[in-house]
Image (cartoon, rainbow, N blue to C red):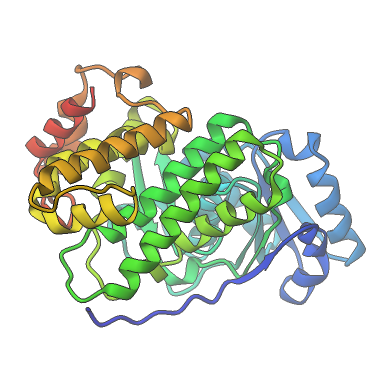
Amino acid sequence: MLNFDYCSPTRLIFGKGVQKEVGPVLKPHTQKLLLHYGGQNIRKSGLYDEITASLRAAGVPFAELGGVVPNPRLSLVHEGIDLCRQEGVDLILAVGGGSVIDSSKAIAAGYYYNGDVWDLYESGRPVDKALPVATVLTIPAAGSEASNSSVITNEEKQLKYGYGCQSLRPLVSFVNPELFFTLPAHQIANGVADMMSHIFERYFSHTPHVDLTDSLCEGTLRTIMRNALLVRENPRNYEAWCEVGFGGTVAHIDLLGLGRAQDWACHGMEHELSALYDVAHGAGLAVLTPNWMQYVYRENTPLFVQFAVNIMGVSGSYRDPDAIVAEGIARLRAFFKAMGLPGTLTELGIGEENLELMAKKATGAAFGQEDPLGGLKKLAWQDVLNIYRLAL
């Protein structure tokens, strides 16, 4: 096990009706906040009225900025930074899923930064000070409600980069699984694939003697998968949503990755799909992850056998580990299919034409500074291209 230094300060308020507590909980922390959200869904559902009523009843002034879209755009982040400065905002309240929360974090990071916030996403340089962020979660997936990370798309450069900094962990997050009842099936499926990938990126590691986090990863994955199928069958199953929603948070607060090297190759490869084709992040991960497994598993066959047995429930002769791993990957593909997720890049409308370009951008080779992806196996651009082609 590796040394680690861990702090997760986000206050998590979880359960029925908790969004109505926004005003009194946030009042001690703000003189004026920015209410940041996506489209009209929170108005149609009545959530907007609940939150604004709570803020007004508590005497919390607010400005607002809507318009966040999946794969959140840098242009709206710039607009949000300007608005916060003009309005004297001292806290951002994100109402939405990972895209809204990531956009809010980017605004928070850029508020005090003397330069273009995109510089931070390109350089990874931490900021010492950011606006505090609070969240009301409407889509469990990204885990951004308690993580230190944010992912933004620069639409002009067709780049999608992640950025992590401890100062971006939300101050408080409100999670009411009842708010997930009306999510369409494709959003449920994409969210499940995303949270599962957050665990896989931590689980597949060469670090030895990590029995505790191995078990935490395996138990969280089994819980998410079992209850995701229940939610798909009945989207109003509150108890199943509690398990899935909490699982998505636990997947990305870094707890499951403590003391172990991590991978993150699948996320790096998928960001290129989203940047160029604007595909849903979870859908891209569902396509790429089994093919990445197939390509790299011999780097640590015993761990992939452990995945197949402990997570996917495979049994068989340990004299034939390749067969056990193959069955584990096949069962993961079958799970994604049962959730209604795509199985190939072709299903996402992606052909051969841009695969090499995406592979080179993912590894930096396109910019003359190649930095191979991944931890379990270092992937040069040719390896990434091979995985993309496997996924066709």
